[in-house]
Image 1 (tube, one colour):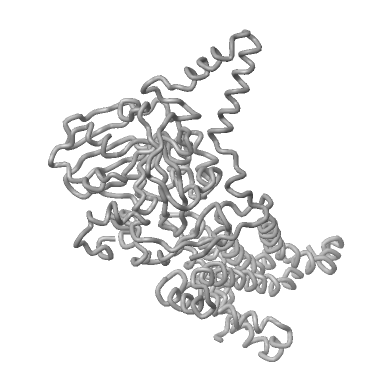
Image 2 (image 1 turned 45 degrees about the vertical axis):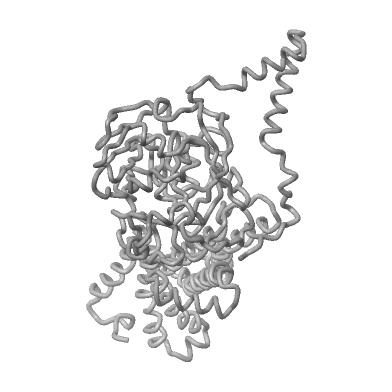
Length: 224
Length: 328
C-alpha cells in the first residue's frame, strides 16, 4: 500500500495533522455548543446540557481509546506502516477526553452541588468509595495517567522500549475498566456498553491470538 | 440553595404573553373575519364565539385545548418551559434517548383507547377512555416532578384525581394494591423491540397511596391534550414518588391483594424499591439523591431535593413508623 505515491505523500505530510484535527473535532464541537448556550443561542446540548456533556466526553474517551487499540491490527491487516506514527497521539487524545470528562464531573456536578472545592473533593472521595461505576471509571483514569506522562519521546527513551511497552500494556485492563464503568452506569439493559465491550473483546482476542500464533517469542510477547 | 441569575437573554416572566391572552387574540381575529363576511352585529359574533369555546360534555378532543378549571395545587417555582417538558422524556418504549420519545411517540395510536379493569372490584371489564375520565370535569394541578436520575421539572397537568376514577370501579376490601400496565405494541413502540426492560411496563401503588388526594391521572398538560411522548392518552402522576412510578399510556388497571410487580424493581431490586418515595436521605446505589438538576432554566441550576418531593404534609402520614430506607 505504501507503494502508492499518493498514499505515501498523505502519510508523510498530512497524516499527523489530519489525525490531530479529527481527534480535536469532538472537543471543538462541544466547546462551540457551550459557547452558543452561554450566549443564549440555539445549541445542540439538549435540555440537560450537563448530562449531555458527561455522556459525550465519556463516550468520546472510550471510543478514542478503542481506536487507539485498533491501530496495530489495522497496520497488520493493511500493511500500512505509517499509521503507527499516530497511535500514541490517539491514545493521548483518549487521556485528554477522560481528563475533561472528570473535570466536567468535578466542576459541573460536585462543585455546583457542594459549593466549595473541599466539598467537591469530599464528594469525589465519597463517590469513588461508594459507587461502583465511579470506582471503576476512576481506576481506569488513574491507570491512564502514567501512560500519558510517559507518552513523550524523552520518557520513552528514558524507560527503554521494552519497559515502556510493558508499562503501556496497562491499556488493556484499563480499557476493560472503562467499558465496565459505562456498563454499570446505564439503566436497564442497554446496547451501547455491550457494543463497546464487543469491540474491545475483539481487539483483545486479536492480541491473544497473535501471541499464540507466534512460534518464536516476539519481544512484545515476552514477560514484562 | 442556588438562586438562578436572570441572564440578559432571558425574557422576564412578565414579558411572556399569557396563553389565554394569545388564544383570545386568535378568537377575536377569527370572529372579526366572520363579522366581515356576514355583517352580523358585534353582539352576535360574541355569542357565536362563546358557543365555540364551550366543549360538548364528555367528548375527548384529539388535540389542542382541554377545558379545565384551576386548583390550589401550585408550586412556588416557575413552570418548566413547554419545549423541555415535551422534548426531554424518559419513555423507554420509544427509545432510551431523552429525545427519542418526542421523535417517535407520534406513531402511537391513542384514539380509540380503552382500559381493561381486572381484579377485586365490582365493575371490571373493558372501558373506553371517555367512560373512565369525565372530560367535562378536568382540573389543572401544578406538580413537581422528580426523576430518579436527579433532575426535576414543574409541570401543569390536566386531568382527574386517581381516587375518583378508582372509586368508580368499586374496588372490594381485598383490593389492597393497584397495578397499572402500559400499552405494548411492537409496531408503534419501537423501543419495545429491544429488552431494555421486561415489557410491558408495570407499576403499582398501595391502595391508600392510590386514594391519596395528590394521586392524579393526567390527560393533558399546559392546557392541552397530552402529547404522546408524555404518556398519551392517559398517565399516572404521583408527585411524591420518583418519576418512573408515574406510568404512561395506561391500558390496564388491576386491583390486587398482594404487592404487585413493578418494572424497575424487577430490573434492579436493590436500586428501585416498590415505594420509590422521593427521599434525599436514601442514595441511589449509584448516585446521590440529595439534590437535583433543574431542567429548562439556568443550565447550572440545582435545588436541594425535599423529602417526598416537598409533599410531606399530604403523604407522610401514610408511612408513619415505616423504615423508608429499608422500604425504599
